Image 1 (tube, rainbow, N blue to C red):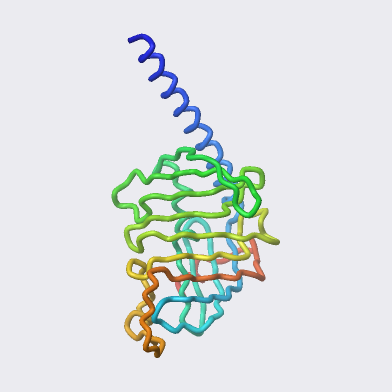
Image 2 (cartoon, rainbow, N blue to C red):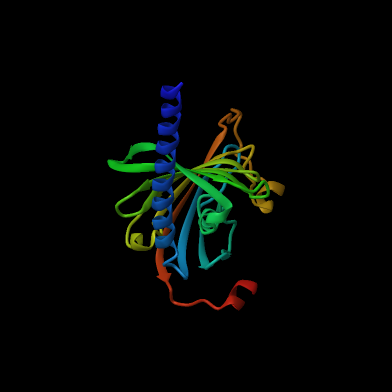
Length: 226
């Protein structure tokens, strides 16, 4: 009986230590992301969605902490917020989730720590979040986001000039076509590719190339209401 009790204690201590390590790593990551008060960037959006023909489009995005976001585009811009702005806003509220360390993984030659983040509230759109974080530079290299509104979204990130802020130069989203919420303009008027062969793929890909960042230059609140 004593052996069993000691074993249980050791397991609980181990879990607590791993949780503390996870909390510390995530806290450091969030602190880095919070260095960004505002930013703007040019975005090239490419989408490969089964049965829907969508041409590449250009847009400009604007963000201001904590939760203001705006997209300016002349065309149709499919810009998933899951794994992007929504994820960062969610992570900035540590009281709304718990986090545990779930292992290690090598991604493109870099060792990462997997953090599993679980929402505390049943009203949160994000239910579960898996992050693969490079712990030295504090960069998210991959994520898997489970949401109420758009199902499961897998995301991969690339970084360049703005990695000191954790701002990516490239993002690729893998979305479940049946679950992902498409823009109303596409949902109401889909330009389906003319083909006799039915495209039975369940996953679509949305790629973002981001450049010409302007970080912490100041953006007025009124800009987001225009």
